[in-house]
Length: 339
Image (cartoon, rainbow, N blue to C red):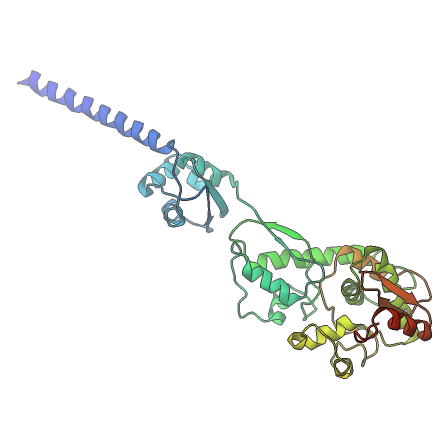
């Protein structure tokens, strides 16, 4: 009887060991078995504080088939759950659950880019943020003034305050995250450029330089002429002349602008109409790149006070009104007014 009992005990232990071995082998096989995804690459976001169970559900919802209990135990027993970093990741077809877990533990996040273009206004910047599928939207209903206050800015108008550049981010980053980076980069670049300003510059503050740069940015895309155009406006400021620059009028028109400026538009007063108001407009009219900023603080020294577009991206400059009128007749007669 005792022998039979010992036999059953040993058999039970043996079966338990075998079951454990089978379970361990099965777990190892599952951990290292390539997954078959619905697409070659699948993006997903790990939220801050997400548990292994929540992450497993996120993966399945995104189209990455993982066995939820297995993923939870794999993360906890390996203590990788303590290392997982919040952010955007990418599962690649053929990844194993173990490789995917290690990627999250290392913080090996996928990356996306958003380019804010020189010359864009803030409305265009917000539209680009809203249209990007990998950016989390948090600013809907937030006013421009509230946004600037949140950024800690003394300037309440957002125009021109966000530096145009290509920003790299992980999926799931917020619109505010990217705007904050662009704002601080803009402040850094502006401070650096302002320190290089000409000694006789007719601009009193960095913000005025930002306004001037935005006008230069919109007036010419021809690099060699930026400083010369800036010099025209500097000369006009010194002489007390109206700047009379069409881009500021267009900005003041807002959505009423339909691609053409008429005489009545030039005569309709707005805070940004430099045909009706002296000096600089109250705010920038667009985002300015480094080249336009540098041209604004280092204008070319000359006597030109007029310029007109030749229609090929370059401009014709002149000193006298008579000469300017001849250039207008030559280059844009019948196409409306210009500089």
